[in-house]
Length: 197
Image (cartoon, rainbow, N blue to C red):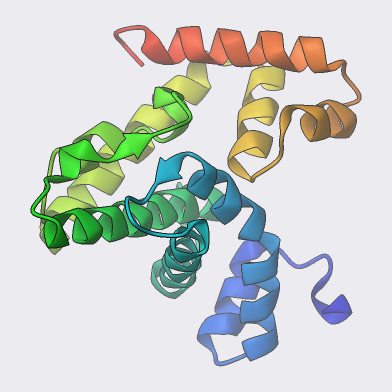
């Protein structure tokens, strides 16, 4: 894996798509923290947390497979959407088996702003490829609009959080106090809830 240090996500994705299994492993290892973070925010009725993690890793694999380098979106943002979508589909399938609807899935995090498309996905039982593309575009636009409102520190905090880092890790990375990171999160949440976010 050392030979891949210093390569961008886009370069790793190109290698992985070209059949380089080690590049794929490197990407999967790099973003496993994001999978774990998104899985912590969900509950699978009648299932184990490992089941959700496995679904999240499948979503991450699909993100690598489907990402087109060179666009406006960062891979991390695209991966978060794909992972969350895969997790939601697993929740939907488990509830369908029990004659329940998708809207009964439980978000344990309470962080509505975590993924801009979450509420739209939860209200749709089945998504066509066209609606998935439209949802992705809308989510990218909402995230872009939100990021335009954020200060440089808030953008860094949000990016690190979406990459799977916790408050204390972010504080250490940015050399700030945990309290200043918490304050940044409060501002991000407030800005994300404003009507034009």
